[in-house]
Image 1 (cartoon, rainbow, N blue to C red):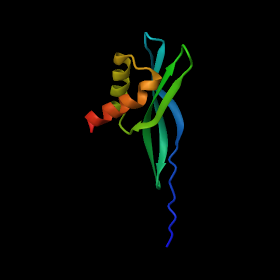
Image 2: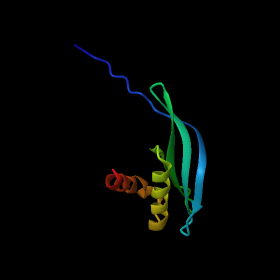
Image 3: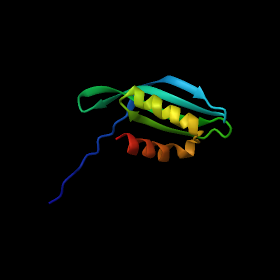
Length: 100
């Protein structure tokens, strides 16, 4: 007996910049706002983007949280720790581990 499992692709659309801060380490930290369709419901989601202007490296988590306070608090933590784009995912795991 065989079964087929279809993976639902969730994509954030209509991304806009909610907040952008340039750190003293020439890194830009952005909180993005966007919409995502989950089943038949449309929800607003907030993402995080980190861009290093010295080498152009960029990392993004487009659906970090549905709560704007969590996204802004995480961005503030990134700024205070002077996080580089390559550290974004590990810091996100640390933050979510503590906040959940």
